[in-house]
Every structure is written in C-alpha cells, then in structure tokens.
Length: 335
Image 1 (cartoon, rainbow, N blue to C red):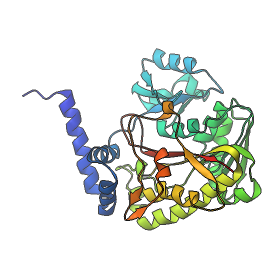
Image 2: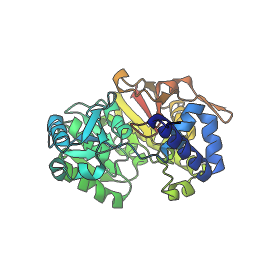
Image 3: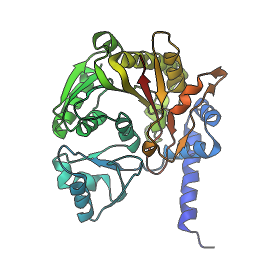
Image 4: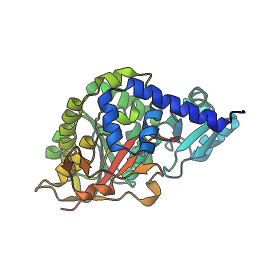
C-alpha cells in the first residue's frame, strides 16, 4: 500500500508525542492532561519535538515590509503572512541561515521572532507619542518591536533586573535603530513606587516556567521544572503585575503575557491581583483581528481552586504550525 505524505506527516506527529511522553516528567504530563483537551495535549507535546516554525518581521525602523519580502522572494525563499499578527511572516520555503544571509538581515532590517511573542507587543495597541513601559524587557525583542510600532516617537522605558541581560538588550536596540528608549536596571516590582501613573501602556512579559517553549533536545529546561518553581514565579508575577497597574495611568492598558501553560502563573495571577481592594482594573478582550485560531478558553478552576470568570477575556495560544504556546491578557486601569 502506498503511504501518502499526509500519513507520513501524521506518523511523525505521533512519534514526537511518544518521545515527549517518554522524556517529560510524569507530573508535567498529568498536569497537561488535566488542563488540555486531547487535541491540544497532542499539539503541545508534538510541538516540543517538531522543528519550530520560523517567523520573522520587518524592522520598519530600517526597511519597509515590501523591501524585506522582495528580498526574501528574490532569494528563492517563500513566506506567507500570519493573518492574526500584523507584519509577521511565516517562512514556508528556506532556512534561518538563508534568512540571516540576506542583505536586509545584515543591516538589521529583518528580525526573526516567534509569532506569539510579536503578538504581545501588538496587544499593547501603542501609538506614536505615547509613554510606554516594558517592565521585564531583556533581551529586547519586544522592546525593539514596540519602538518600531511607535515610529521611534514618544518615550519607551525598558527595564530589567539583570544587568548582564541588559547588555544584550542595549545591543539589540542599537542594531535595530531604536532611539526613543530609556533603559533602567532594577526590580520591576518596585517601579510602581517610583513611576506611579507615568505611562499610557505597560507590558509585563513576565519571567515564567516556560512550559510553552519546552524542547526535547534541550532537557536542561525540563530538568529545572518543578511545581515549587511555579509557585515562586507566581508570587513574583503577582508583584510585577501590581507594579504595572500602579505605573499605568487611569484608562491606560497593561498587557500581561507568559510562555507557560501553568494556570498558577496565568489566570490565578490575574485573579489574585484583581481581587485586591486597592486595585481597580478590568480584563478587556484582545481586538478580534489579533486572536489566533489555535486558542483555548482560559481556565477558571484548577486543582480544586476557583478564580473569577473575568479571566475568560484573556487568551491561551496552543502551539501549532505557526507559533509556540503563550498566554496574553489585556488589563485596563479604571481608577
């Protein structure tokens, strides 16, 4: 019997699921099976092994999208736009090395970045002349993207607690031509005291357990995973989100994002912060055109605990052929 390409593809998909189930700790698998539908469970596990999708954006501070895409096509590579992520293109023929060898890459007119990562910056809905804070900015992919969306106008503050990681941040900003950025080094959770109501937009791309970006060929991240780490990160994430809501002006927007599946770091962080008496804010839906097709509803119940139904306005992105797992919530400060 002739084996079709589709059958080969499905067989490969199943192989990656099997390998993931063999390599991932039992506790992770149990949590995923409780959290995800059978289909999403399979997609998540397969994504840890299959080649990662290659997505890129034009750096519009250097070149136009048309100029970048023309170079890609002239080099006999092919790409297609991702409808839910403006300026994001999926490489459908070609390699990362070939992309990096293009003249537009040599002048930093093209930037390789995960689509879900780009989406967090678009969710901020920034405009030129705004005052914007990237609370956990290093290594700088989203910061440089935000600067481009702002057309290098207004003020963009990039903060990170790691002085070492800030070297990489500054390098990326310089290479990308981002000139409207002020770099700070310090604990993000303290900025609510020093920069109260200073910003129109705040991005909290929080440090997380990274479950959406597990790779079977990089077992170190898997070995580091623990529920204790999740609990510790959730406490930090809560403090960062509180600081962000204090930094943003009334009527301003905070975007909270992680690349993990863990509800403790996502919905339950939102729940704890929104329940605080001294914080008046609400979760608002992402604009329709920014919602990917591969999503699942946020959870309101997890391991015997309940959280507010308000979290259902956030989105969970399931790994697929275009991107990795991600969580995004838009929060408006009311008063």
